[in-house]
Image (cartoon, rainbow, N blue to C red):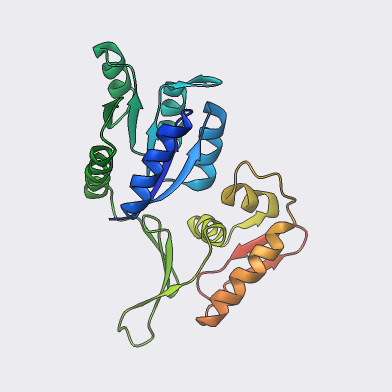
Length: 231
């Protein structure tokens, strides 16, 4: 099992240990050290699970738990020194999936991560969008093309930003999106100029063209871009 794990922990030594064990376990990790950074990186990194400390600079970790729960329902394991029943119950009632008390065995934390991800995947519906000969797999963050002879699916090698842009357009085909809308869908907290989307779309269209679907995305003069699924 693999996946993206966001470690929200202001004690760098503890975060280093968690990252080391998770990396060895085949996971991709990202680090956040404060409430604001955790919320920003959750939007950008789009993790499959969050390891979250309660005591953080700039606020309470429970604020992060509430924000990401309302935004995406990402599984969360609390990792904290608070061992009282009140803290545990509050976290679980607010949507945490598990609770680990410091000091902990890092190997056990990795096993808990695996267990929570298995449960999440077992209960998560298979979310896909069909656009012409393409299938957007929202769970796997992948775009696949159906073979002409029906023999299987070919993965289109998109970057995370290209995938987010294409998936956003696929949810509302034929709608014209502004550049700023597409930039916000790909990276909500980015300070890049909206014209950066032109570069992303150019590369995206080239990759779609390589699998015979290059004309699905067209520019809309004075607005931005739109997706035509039947092309």
